[in-house]
Amino acid sequence: MKTWVHDFGKFKIVLDESDKDLSRQVKFTGAYNDEKLETAVIRENLKPGYTMVDIGANLGFYSMLAASLVGSAGRVFSFEPFAHNVDLIRASARENGFDNVKVISCAVSDKIGSAKLYLSPYYSSEHSLFDYHYSTGSDSTENTVDVKTVTIDQYLESEVGDLRVDFIKMDIEGSEGKAISGMEKTITENKNVSLLTEFWPNAIANSGVEPKEYLERLTGFGFELFHIDGVEQRVYPVTASQILDIMKRRSAEGFEDYKEIALGGWYTTLLCKK
Image (cartoon, rainbow, N blue to C red; front, side, top):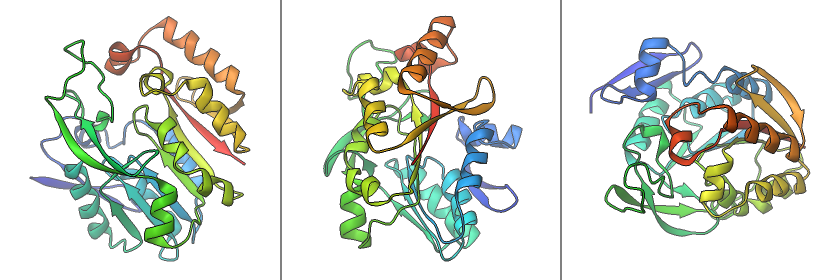
């Protein structure tokens, strides 16, 4: 694998020359996935000494950003099931000298075991624990890899020895509803934990969890929801019903990219704060 290093100032990330997805975007734009609001939210919410859990770390941008913010006294647990990406994240941690980053080559779900990771034929950032039905219109296992699954509660208790977490970022292509079920104890015991989660209603539903149920689980933990609105470029409080209405309306107006064409519906990001 031929790699190159991009310097974001406070940290660097190692990228794959052959990647036609986010690595190419960084190379030509200097930005990571145009997620300026998400980056700003993380900068505002992470402090030295904090513990951050990155679920669906992909290339490790947010893990490296977090490591630069929490410092040597803090911790970053980076969960990524795709082995190729795991190698890049570990290379980035070495490049930065971030000894506080622990990379876990597992998918996060609601149970310990194994699962099939469906590999997107389009973008390396869109691998998922369920089939998008991109091209065949039916379930297919032709382009999958077997991966281990863990729960956050189990991993932190058995492998780390404590459940202390200050910030969780989760972007796992619709599997967020499953993952949240495996971190109930972690969220409950950390009174001030914040959660940054992708919210893609149709993908969540396709994974077997109703979007409304997912939002109710979040508010049931005592979280207040904030919409990180990439369309209006602002962050504002919303109720569960309001964000569902926004997603329904925007999905009816048009599709943002191939993901919506594949499964239908808009996606966005929510900040959940206690």
